[in-house]
Image 1 (cartoon, one colour):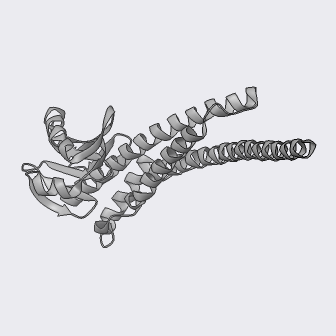
Image 2 (cartoon, one colour):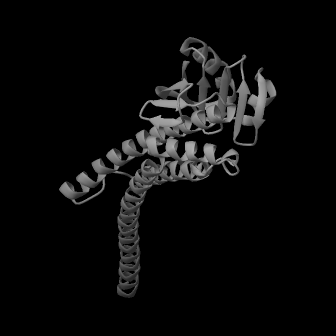
Length: 259
């Protein structure tokens, strides 16, 4: 039997509390970060607080309708779709994972859940990678201007907003570090643990995460440089103001003595 798992980033954040309270389906598992539902018999939905929803054995048309419903509990709708899918074959000789395909020896809800979890993590990483690459490109524009003109083309207020944006992205990634830990269900089941490790390997989750972290560090280093240049510029301006005030006071005293 051949089916498919599909994951899509629909928002920046999904309120797990509100979704759990209002979304109508049989809830199989829940915690503060995720919700795992059986939608209809043999159909599953996985909702994550970092804005990703994944589906098993549900058509993309129905998945789109469900996403629109779950969007009511999300913040910052993602306009440019970030999604990924993987074919799942039930009834193979053994569990096997390859690019774009997962073969399971037999149907197991926890195996399906692990596949949905990993494909969702992959989509989340794609989203973060797109954001960090865009910020890195923006940073390169400023560094190129600095190289050519010898000064920055960004004001103090805009620089602070820019730094805040980068820190927010870094915090979002750090908040979701848990997604790269092995799931609880793998701790006591060697088969599930092996499946989980193979999924992480095929989706290349850890290397992609490190790549994003490296990009964020480069951006941070550039921003530190921008901040130092801006601070030096403001300090120089302040020094000149003090010098002018002292000079005015000296001239004033000189005039008073002459009079």
